[in-house]
Length: 192
Image (tube, rainbow, N blue to C red; front, side, top):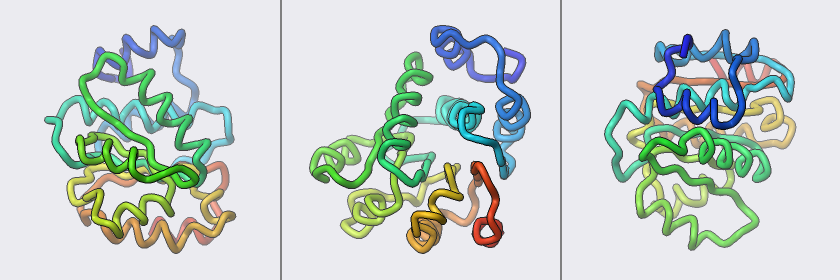
């Protein structure tokens, strides 16, 4: 309530059994809600996912649903993508907004069908997102907010060239949220 989140999100957070934000959530959620760019460096297990997901869902709830995603979360692994998708389902339970998760290692057809139905929030790994972009199965020209989650792991896994290609497809005017456990120089360069 004190952070100013949409009442449906506050209800979902309470349903999940949480009552107090973690330090990273307390410091970053107000900045993200103000529409400012943000770089957050915090260790795994500190609540980073909710720190970016709750403001994203808040902003999506305030807008109108449409055929194209308004928010994009890029994360390095399908396990992280699936985890973020599960949390989006949990926290967005009382919102009438759609999200989907796309990652490699599975067929593209079911992902393509979900994208065609329209989503407000897209969670993706870089390679599979580029696959869908290359086939014109997703349009990112309406993205208002992009989150790079675990940016340091994307560097370690060699995904920075793919991430740069994804970022070039996004509108120049957007909110950027970077979350990472560490901040190597290559990530700082990407952020700049």
